[in-house]
Length: 307
Figure 1 (tube, rainbow, N blue to C red):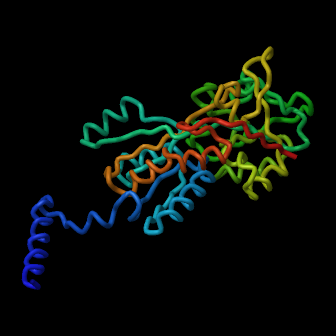
Figure 2: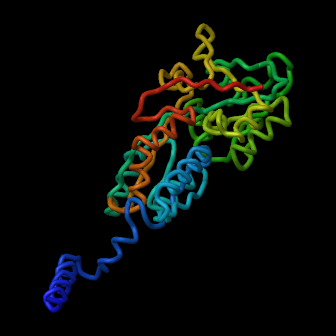
Figure 3: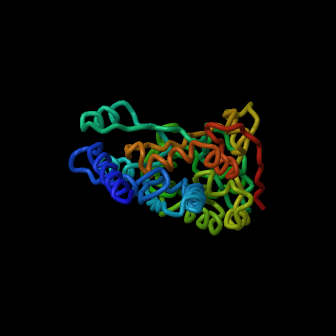
Protein backbone atom coordinates (compact mmCIF):
# COMPACT_ATOMS: atom_id res chain seq x y z
CA UNK A 1 0.00 0.00 0.00
CA UNK A 2 2.79 2.44 0.97
CA UNK A 3 4.67 1.55 -2.22
CA UNK A 4 1.57 2.37 -4.32
CA UNK A 5 1.29 5.79 -2.66
CA UNK A 6 4.97 6.53 -3.32
CA UNK A 7 4.62 5.49 -6.97
CA UNK A 8 1.51 7.69 -7.27
CA UNK A 9 3.39 10.72 -5.92
CA UNK A 10 6.28 10.13 -8.32
CA UNK A 11 3.89 9.88 -11.27
CA UNK A 12 2.15 13.10 -10.20
CA UNK A 13 5.46 14.99 -10.01
CA UNK A 14 6.48 13.66 -13.42
CA UNK A 15 3.13 14.76 -14.84
CA UNK A 16 3.53 18.32 -13.49
CA UNK A 17 7.02 18.64 -14.96
CA UNK A 18 5.90 17.19 -18.29
CA UNK A 19 3.20 19.90 -18.57
CA UNK A 20 5.64 22.72 -17.79
CA UNK A 21 7.19 24.68 -20.67
CA UNK A 22 10.91 23.99 -21.24
CA UNK A 23 13.37 25.84 -18.98
CA UNK A 24 10.61 27.01 -16.62
CA UNK A 25 10.55 26.06 -12.97
CA UNK A 26 6.99 24.87 -12.20
CA UNK A 27 7.25 26.25 -8.66
CA UNK A 28 7.88 29.76 -10.04
CA UNK A 29 4.19 30.11 -10.82
CA UNK A 30 3.52 30.17 -7.09
CA UNK A 31 5.74 33.21 -6.56
CA UNK A 32 3.86 35.64 -8.78
CA UNK A 33 0.09 35.38 -8.78
CA UNK A 34 -2.81 37.84 -8.62
CA UNK A 35 -2.39 38.06 -4.86
CA UNK A 36 1.27 37.19 -4.27
CA UNK A 37 4.72 38.37 -5.30
CA UNK A 38 6.45 41.70 -5.87
CA UNK A 39 5.57 44.44 -8.33
CA UNK A 40 6.88 47.92 -9.06
CA UNK A 41 4.23 50.34 -10.32
CA UNK A 42 5.03 53.81 -11.66
CA UNK A 43 2.29 56.27 -10.67
CA UNK A 44 1.70 59.89 -11.62
CA UNK A 45 2.38 61.90 -8.47
CA UNK A 46 -0.98 63.70 -8.61
CA UNK A 47 -2.67 60.34 -7.87
CA UNK A 48 -0.46 59.57 -4.86
CA UNK A 49 -3.06 59.80 -2.09
CA UNK A 50 -5.49 57.52 -3.94
CA UNK A 51 -2.88 54.84 -4.59
CA UNK A 52 -1.30 55.00 -1.14
CA UNK A 53 -4.71 54.03 0.22
CA UNK A 54 -5.42 51.48 -2.51
CA UNK A 55 -2.08 49.68 -2.13
CA UNK A 56 -2.37 49.57 1.68
CA UNK A 57 -5.85 48.07 1.38
CA UNK A 58 -4.76 45.55 -1.27
CA UNK A 59 -1.74 44.39 0.75
CA UNK A 60 -3.94 44.09 3.84
CA UNK A 61 -6.18 41.73 1.90
CA UNK A 62 -3.24 39.89 0.28
CA UNK A 63 -0.39 39.79 2.87
CA UNK A 64 1.99 37.99 0.49
CA UNK A 65 1.73 40.80 -2.07
CA UNK A 66 4.38 43.52 -2.11
CA UNK A 67 3.52 46.44 -4.38
CA UNK A 68 6.17 49.13 -4.53
CA UNK A 69 4.82 52.44 -5.90
CA UNK A 70 7.19 54.95 -7.48
CA UNK A 71 5.67 58.41 -7.88
CA UNK A 72 6.95 60.37 -10.87
CA UNK A 73 5.93 62.96 -13.46
CA UNK A 74 3.90 61.59 -16.34
CA UNK A 75 6.49 62.04 -19.11
CA UNK A 76 9.15 60.27 -17.03
CA UNK A 77 6.75 57.39 -16.41
CA UNK A 78 6.08 56.83 -20.10
CA UNK A 79 9.80 56.85 -20.92
CA UNK A 80 10.47 54.37 -18.13
CA UNK A 81 7.65 52.15 -19.43
CA UNK A 82 9.32 52.07 -22.84
CA UNK A 83 12.59 51.10 -21.19
CA UNK A 84 10.90 48.24 -19.34
CA UNK A 85 11.61 49.63 -15.86
CA UNK A 86 8.09 48.68 -14.80
CA UNK A 87 5.28 46.50 -16.10
CA UNK A 88 2.43 48.72 -14.91
CA UNK A 89 1.95 52.47 -14.97
CA UNK A 90 -0.77 54.89 -13.88
CA UNK A 91 -1.16 58.08 -15.92
CA UNK A 92 -3.88 60.53 -16.97
CA UNK A 93 -4.40 59.23 -20.51
CA UNK A 94 -4.33 56.13 -22.64
CA UNK A 95 -1.38 55.47 -24.90
CA UNK A 96 -1.69 57.10 -28.30
CA UNK A 97 -1.48 55.36 -31.67
CA UNK A 98 2.24 55.94 -32.14
CA UNK A 99 3.06 54.70 -28.64
CA UNK A 100 1.04 51.53 -29.13
CA UNK A 101 2.62 50.99 -32.54
CA UNK A 102 6.09 51.31 -31.02
CA UNK A 103 5.34 48.74 -28.31
CA UNK A 104 3.83 46.34 -30.84
CA UNK A 105 7.02 46.62 -32.89
CA UNK A 106 8.80 45.30 -29.80
CA UNK A 107 6.25 42.46 -29.55
CA UNK A 108 4.90 43.86 -26.28
CA UNK A 109 1.27 43.16 -25.39
CA UNK A 110 -0.24 46.14 -23.56
CA UNK A 111 -3.63 46.36 -21.86
CA UNK A 112 -5.18 49.72 -20.93
CA UNK A 113 -7.97 50.24 -18.41
CA UNK A 114 -9.70 53.45 -17.39
CA UNK A 115 -10.40 53.19 -13.67
CA UNK A 116 -11.66 56.67 -12.74
CA UNK A 117 -12.42 60.26 -13.70
CA UNK A 118 -10.42 62.97 -11.95
CA UNK A 119 -10.11 66.75 -12.25
CA UNK A 120 -7.50 69.47 -12.43
CA UNK A 121 -8.12 71.69 -9.41
CA UNK A 122 -7.18 75.34 -8.89
CA UNK A 123 -6.51 76.59 -5.38
CA UNK A 124 -5.89 80.06 -3.91
CA UNK A 125 -4.97 81.60 -0.58
CA UNK A 126 -7.88 82.28 1.85
CA UNK A 127 -7.27 86.05 1.55
CA UNK A 128 -7.77 85.93 -2.20
CA UNK A 129 -11.32 86.97 -3.11
CA UNK A 130 -10.99 85.91 -6.75
CA UNK A 131 -12.42 82.41 -6.32
CA UNK A 132 -14.42 82.37 -9.56
CA UNK A 133 -12.75 81.90 -12.93
CA UNK A 134 -14.00 81.16 -16.42
CA UNK A 135 -12.23 78.76 -18.74
CA UNK A 136 -11.16 81.72 -20.86
CA UNK A 137 -9.69 83.50 -17.85
CA UNK A 138 -7.69 80.38 -16.97
CA UNK A 139 -6.40 80.25 -20.54
CA UNK A 140 -5.49 83.95 -20.46
CA UNK A 141 -3.57 83.50 -17.20
CA UNK A 142 -1.63 80.55 -18.60
CA UNK A 143 -0.87 82.40 -21.83
CA UNK A 144 0.32 85.48 -19.97
CA UNK A 145 -2.54 87.68 -21.19
CA UNK A 146 -4.09 88.08 -17.74
CA UNK A 147 -1.35 89.02 -15.29
CA UNK A 148 -3.11 90.42 -12.23
CA UNK A 149 -5.90 89.40 -9.89
CA UNK A 150 -9.11 91.36 -10.50
CA UNK A 151 -9.80 92.17 -6.85
CA UNK A 152 -6.36 92.87 -5.38
CA UNK A 153 -4.45 93.88 -8.49
CA UNK A 154 -1.55 91.69 -7.37
CA UNK A 155 0.53 89.81 -9.90
CA UNK A 156 -0.64 86.22 -10.43
CA UNK A 157 1.94 83.49 -9.88
CA UNK A 158 0.91 80.08 -11.21
CA UNK A 159 2.53 77.13 -9.45
CA UNK A 160 2.54 73.54 -10.76
CA UNK A 161 3.77 70.34 -9.14
CA UNK A 162 6.45 69.41 -11.69
CA UNK A 163 7.41 70.17 -15.28
CA UNK A 164 5.91 67.54 -17.61
CA UNK A 165 3.54 66.24 -14.94
CA UNK A 166 -0.01 65.15 -15.76
CA UNK A 167 -1.31 68.47 -14.41
CA UNK A 168 1.12 70.46 -16.55
CA UNK A 169 0.58 68.36 -19.69
CA UNK A 170 -3.20 68.58 -19.43
CA UNK A 171 -3.32 72.38 -19.22
CA UNK A 172 -0.58 72.78 -21.83
CA UNK A 173 -2.75 70.86 -24.30
CA UNK A 174 -6.21 72.13 -23.32
CA UNK A 175 -5.27 75.79 -22.83
CA UNK A 176 -2.43 76.09 -25.36
CA UNK A 177 -0.29 77.25 -22.46
CA UNK A 178 2.75 79.41 -23.11
CA UNK A 179 5.65 77.54 -21.52
CA UNK A 180 7.78 80.71 -21.59
CA UNK A 181 5.29 82.59 -19.41
CA UNK A 182 7.30 83.96 -16.48
CA UNK A 183 4.21 83.81 -14.26
CA UNK A 184 4.43 80.00 -14.30
CA UNK A 185 6.85 77.87 -12.30
CA UNK A 186 7.00 74.41 -10.74
CA UNK A 187 7.95 72.96 -7.36
CA UNK A 188 8.38 69.23 -6.67
CA UNK A 189 4.99 67.80 -5.73
CA UNK A 190 1.29 68.51 -5.30
CA UNK A 191 1.85 68.82 -1.57
CA UNK A 192 4.46 71.53 -2.14
CA UNK A 193 1.99 73.40 -4.35
CA UNK A 194 -0.54 73.39 -1.50
CA UNK A 195 2.04 74.62 1.01
CA UNK A 196 3.23 77.34 -1.37
CA UNK A 197 -0.31 78.66 -1.87
CA UNK A 198 -0.86 78.74 1.90
CA UNK A 199 2.10 81.12 2.23
CA UNK A 200 1.58 83.27 -0.90
CA UNK A 201 -1.70 85.20 -1.26
CA UNK A 202 -1.13 86.08 -4.93
CA UNK A 203 -0.57 82.48 -6.09
CA UNK A 204 -2.77 80.18 -8.15
CA UNK A 205 -1.99 76.53 -7.45
CA UNK A 206 -2.66 73.66 -9.86
CA UNK A 207 -3.12 70.21 -8.26
CA UNK A 208 -4.88 66.91 -8.78
CA UNK A 209 -8.28 66.77 -7.09
CA UNK A 210 -7.34 63.61 -5.20
CA UNK A 211 -5.05 65.61 -2.90
CA UNK A 212 -7.99 67.46 -1.31
CA UNK A 213 -11.07 65.40 -2.10
CA UNK A 214 -11.30 62.79 0.68
CA UNK A 215 -13.06 64.44 3.64
CA UNK A 216 -12.35 61.46 5.92
CA UNK A 217 -8.59 61.85 5.52
CA UNK A 218 -7.02 63.92 8.32
CA UNK A 219 -4.22 65.13 6.03
CA UNK A 220 -6.81 66.39 3.55
CA UNK A 221 -8.63 68.25 6.30
CA UNK A 222 -5.33 69.88 7.24
CA UNK A 223 -4.63 70.84 3.62
CA UNK A 224 -8.05 72.46 3.27
CA UNK A 225 -7.55 74.72 6.29
CA UNK A 226 -5.20 77.03 4.44
CA UNK A 227 -6.64 77.18 0.92
CA UNK A 228 -9.76 77.89 -1.11
CA UNK A 229 -10.87 75.83 -4.09
CA UNK A 230 -11.68 77.87 -7.18
CA UNK A 231 -15.02 77.38 -8.95
CA UNK A 232 -14.83 77.40 -12.74
CA UNK A 233 -17.42 78.25 -15.43
CA UNK A 234 -17.29 77.22 -19.06
CA UNK A 235 -17.97 80.83 -20.05
CA UNK A 236 -19.15 84.13 -18.55
CA UNK A 237 -22.83 83.19 -19.00
CA UNK A 238 -22.52 79.74 -17.40
CA UNK A 239 -22.79 78.66 -13.78
CA UNK A 240 -19.63 78.17 -11.75
CA UNK A 241 -18.82 74.69 -10.46
CA UNK A 242 -16.30 73.29 -8.02
CA UNK A 243 -14.77 69.86 -8.74
CA UNK A 244 -17.28 67.69 -6.89
CA UNK A 245 -17.79 64.13 -8.14
CA UNK A 246 -21.25 64.80 -9.59
CA UNK A 247 -20.04 67.79 -11.60
CA UNK A 248 -17.03 65.83 -12.81
CA UNK A 249 -19.30 63.01 -13.96
CA UNK A 250 -21.55 65.43 -15.89
CA UNK A 251 -18.52 67.47 -16.98
CA UNK A 252 -20.20 70.64 -15.79
CA UNK A 253 -16.86 71.24 -14.13
CA UNK A 254 -14.75 71.89 -17.25
CA UNK A 255 -11.29 70.54 -16.39
CA UNK A 256 -11.93 66.80 -16.23
CA UNK A 257 -9.46 64.02 -17.04
CA UNK A 258 -9.22 60.24 -16.63
CA UNK A 259 -7.01 57.90 -14.64
CA UNK A 260 -5.61 55.00 -16.66
CA UNK A 261 -3.76 51.87 -15.61
CA UNK A 262 -1.58 50.52 -18.42
CA UNK A 263 -0.19 47.04 -17.92
CA UNK A 264 2.15 44.69 -19.76
CA UNK A 265 2.63 42.29 -16.87
CA UNK A 266 1.80 38.59 -17.04
CA UNK A 267 -1.93 37.91 -17.10
CA UNK A 268 -1.62 35.62 -14.09
CA UNK A 269 0.85 37.83 -12.17
CA UNK A 270 0.60 40.40 -9.38
CA UNK A 271 0.67 43.41 -11.72
CA UNK A 272 -2.45 42.19 -13.46
CA UNK A 273 -4.01 41.19 -10.15
CA UNK A 274 -3.72 44.75 -8.84
CA UNK A 275 -5.23 46.20 -12.02
CA UNK A 276 -8.16 43.78 -11.72
CA UNK A 277 -8.52 44.81 -8.07
CA UNK A 278 -8.71 48.52 -8.96
CA UNK A 279 -11.30 47.79 -11.66
CA UNK A 280 -13.32 45.62 -9.29
CA UNK A 281 -15.79 46.40 -6.54
CA UNK A 282 -13.27 47.13 -3.78
CA UNK A 283 -11.01 49.33 -5.88
CA UNK A 284 -13.96 51.25 -7.31
CA UNK A 285 -15.32 51.77 -3.79
CA UNK A 286 -11.96 53.23 -2.71
CA UNK A 287 -12.10 55.61 -5.67
CA UNK A 288 -15.66 56.61 -4.81
CA UNK A 289 -14.75 57.18 -1.18
CA UNK A 290 -11.97 59.50 -2.34
CA UNK A 291 -14.70 61.62 -4.00
CA UNK A 292 -13.48 60.80 -7.49
CA UNK A 293 -15.66 59.22 -10.16
CA UNK A 294 -15.21 55.43 -10.47
CA UNK A 295 -15.27 54.12 -14.02
CA UNK A 296 -17.37 51.05 -13.23
CA UNK A 297 -19.64 52.05 -10.35
CA UNK A 298 -22.53 54.45 -9.67
CA UNK A 299 -21.66 58.03 -8.71
CA UNK A 300 -22.68 59.82 -5.54
CA UNK A 301 -22.08 63.49 -4.85
CA UNK A 302 -19.84 64.32 -1.87
CA UNK A 303 -18.94 67.93 -1.25
CA UNK A 304 -15.86 69.20 0.53
CA UNK A 305 -15.45 72.60 2.12
CA UNK A 306 -12.39 74.81 2.42
CA UNK A 307 -12.10 77.14 5.40
